[in-house]
Length: 338
Image (tube, rainbow, N blue to C red; front, top):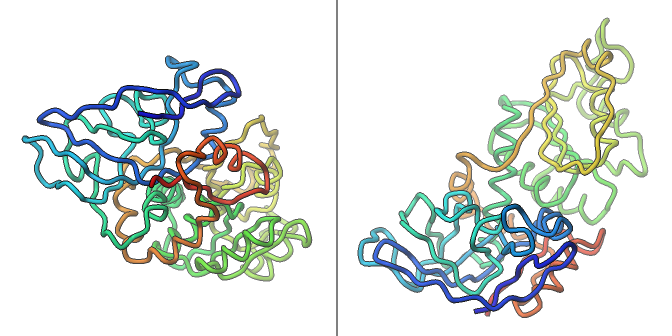
């Protein structure tokens, strides 16, 4: 079968590999959609992920159809539409250094258990929307890490897929007001469509001053100046200006979560941060959220569909990778299989 692998630094290629076989405890999946993540470009630039340098299968945002069920497997049937916990496979992380990748025609789930590696979803949900389950779990974990209280005032930097997923997550957690900051008008429009209360184009206006208007004045005797009353900031952008801005304007006791990948070190003034007692939290992956977010996708899949900007057929998967890595060319690219 055909599969997309990192074959050398800055090179992703088609590779012919053996089609996996399912044993009595396994489930064979036909891939139906797989999103392209920013980390796919990082893996490609690095030439793969150890120990599979030069031979890393790509694709970790999958949706699939069950085509074969082992005799010992219960709770799953041929024809089921499923999403996958890519961190729960026995042969490594799917598409992130493991033996298999979602940009392949078939994937086998060894020792398959419904509710552990696989979750059945309704067949009415389009494949490209079902494939959002993995990145939306990443966003949901980021929201949970910032521990929002009901009524929290929140700012999300970055209106890419993770940022938009975070908006939906903060809504689920009862945030009272969610603002999204970005520099691309089309992304800000999507933020409003998925439920943001307000948006700020930081290329055109002073984000801090606007936040004071939206969230009130949070300045105190120890933390003077322009201090919005924002409770939670989430960096889903990965731009160096974001942590510098947040740490300079956060009110006392605010929380700053970072889910974005920063490719270069960012210098921060710890002395000035000290007086704000800013809570700094980090977020990676989805320890528990992978199938928790599925329920919301099932209930509100049309809202999630707004996040997908481009669908590309599997035979053009290499083009899809290039499209996704080109700044400003696309917001969320999903490869679909015929």
